[in-house]
Image (cartoon, one colour):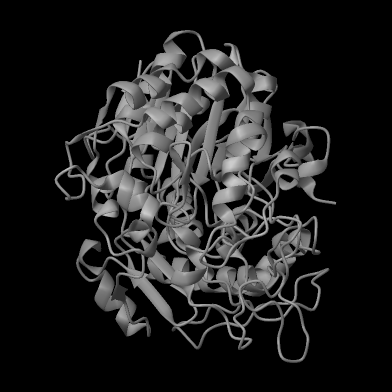
Length: 579
């Protein structure tokens, strides 16, 4: 059974069984002044860090009105779906971890989309038996899963909200009705050559009366989105999972090219999941993420491998520190690509992957120089899965919210790649999340892929919203990022930067990105301190630019004496702000 289905949230006291009760007192994380970047801000009471300033303001408005972190998350998501539709929205899915300041419990919420009942393992194979062209698949009616982000937020808000659900959509509704200035990233995405930006719905939405696409600063309105928000405020998630909007979704997905099988029953039957966060010790802290099918287990495995190295002695100006990070990442990704899937459908060997004996075994494979791509290991309880052929694009967004009571939300949310599948209903885009499944469900010998398509199954995800606690269960920091499969590396970098290299969260976010998997070392070579790139080359690492290395959108909040410090990735247009 999936860990999300267990009834009780994670209780911090259970961590004492991990042998931490007698450890040394925790050292403060990141107490340096916040002068590293204008993206870093300090506030005494509450904070929002998100990918767009309009979404941040929407969240702060709810917090100032007495709302909780989860209340504000609803407002932030509703606004991001309007001003950042290339990344997330009402038609997408998400993972969230919530820290309760009173109980010191961390709960994970799973709003990942599900495959319809009519989905088949070979649905992304052509008549010739070969995988469909990815661009064709992403804009097909088969690509969309049943959306879960709003249903998940509704569940979390019913448990941890302070305001009425109906009071949380006002700012997003106002922007949709009265107009908002088009953000730069939205305009860039709308003008891109991505298949989803070329669909009839996208063309109609982003084209001005003079025939040109929207530009940054243009005032854009979306009255259909405002109407949908009013319906959501009044009816909750069933506003889009049942009734006229649900019928529009089904009709849209049954249109060519390559119609899908979504039904009204699929939409009505969607259920979000909630349960214990997956938490493990790292140094003197506890790191919590959602369990599979999120990327959380991979982040924790990467930390587990690094716990058996001396990376803390080799800071970001030392090639050896980056070498250890990269080689641990390669080992982590090899296991992720082989073993992770939806635990409601396949056996995911999470306990084996995170067993200290296993991570020590993996760490011993890190030699003095880089070798060939590592093979997946054999963790305890691992089934016989075949190699995976999933190709995950780099969409998505992440935000973190801390309220005045000390509760914290870390939420990664997505419509998959740019504008999801490019199909729009009721003012929002639908997702193309099912293309996160392996297009090839099995090997020639019949060995199945862990991430093969199945009816009702949730596709594997890299989304890994993270919360860090001290040994007493007190909040230390929260972080997360968009970026497709690179999310795991981005989040891992942020934790290592804070915990091992004693940086502020903003400094950790601004470190060069490094995505090391297989034969690829995708990074930002020009951002390394002098000598680092040459040192890595001497160890057999051929650094390349691109492949998503520059596409992180890390956002986070850390606790500091007297308040909170927010952080936002300078690679995107997000900010942090509080009061």
